[in-house]
Image (cartoon, rainbow over all chains, first blue to last red; front, side, top):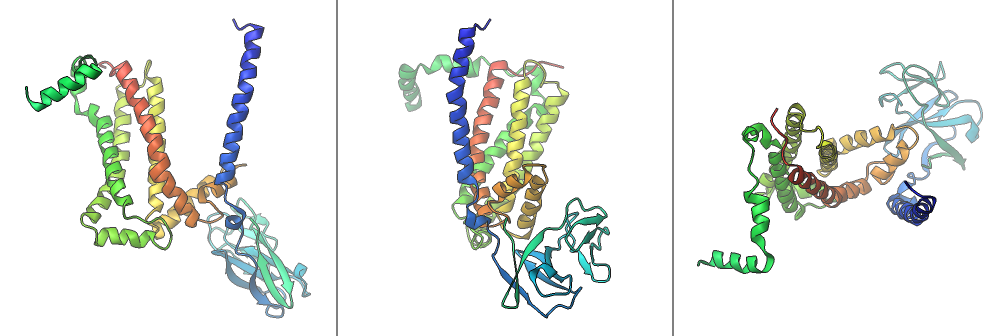
Length: 147
Length: 220
C-alpha cells in the first residue's frame, strides 16, 4: 500500500524528471524544426502584367515546383479582382483546368470541381485548392506564399 | 603449450573466462526440435544486418549526401571504384533480403506460437525491430537522389502529411522544409547511417538478451 507520504514523494520526484524531459524534447524539436529561411516560399514571383488577361481568363505558371494559375476574375485591375491558386488537385494530384464559361476549376481525372476561390464544389477532392497571395505593383502582378 | 593456449590461460587467470564460457556456450544445447532450418530465419536476418553494416560503411566512404553530388558519387562508386558495383548491389539486395527474412522469421515465430507467455515482450521488441528496418529502407531509398528516390520520398512524406491534426508538422519535420530538398537528403542520411543503426543495435541486444534468459520456445 502506498502511503500518503510515499505518494507525495513520488509526485515531487516526478515533477523535475518529467519537466526536465519535456524541456529537453522541446529544445530538440526546436533544433530539428526547419529555420525560417528553409520554410519560406520562393518569395514574390512575377507572373503577369495588368492587361495581359481579359476578364475570366487564366494564366498558367509554375510556382514552387507546383503548377498554378492566375485568374482575372472580375472587371477591375486591383488585386481583389485576381485570384492565384495552386492547380494540383487535392484528390490525386492531377492538374485542374480553369473553365472561364463556368468559372470553375475542373479536374480531368475524376471530375473534381472547385470554384474560383479553390473551394470544393463537387467530386472526390478532400480539401480546397491552396490560394496564393496576389500583389500588384506598378502594373506588374506578383504571387507569393507563406508556409 | 601453444601460443593460443598460453594466451587463453593468461586471459583466464585475469578474467575468469572459463565459468562464463561454460555457462553461456557449452551448457546451452540446441533442442532437437529447433534443428529444423525454419529456426534459422532470425539468425539469417542478423547475418543480412551485419552485411548491411559492412557494405554500408564501405559505401559511406565514397557517397556524398548533397543534391549536387549524391547521384554522381553513386555513379562513381558503380563505375570506377573497384568492387564498388558489387558493394552497392550487396547493400541493395541485402536490404531486400533482410526484410524478407524478417517476415519469414515472424511467420515461424507466429506459427510455432513462440510469441506467447513468457515471450510477449520479445515479440514487441521484434515488431519495433521491423519498424526500424522499414525506416532504414525508406531513408535509404532517397539517397541515390534519382527520380524514383525523389518521388517515392515525396509520396511517402505526403502520407505522413495526411495524418489529421499534426500531420503537416510531421511532414515539415521529415522534409526539413515544405518540399523534398537538400535538407531532406541530409536528414535521411543522418537517420540512415547514425540514428537508426544505434537504435537497431540496442533493440537487437535486448532481443538477444531476452532469448538468452528465456531460452528458445518448446516443441509444438
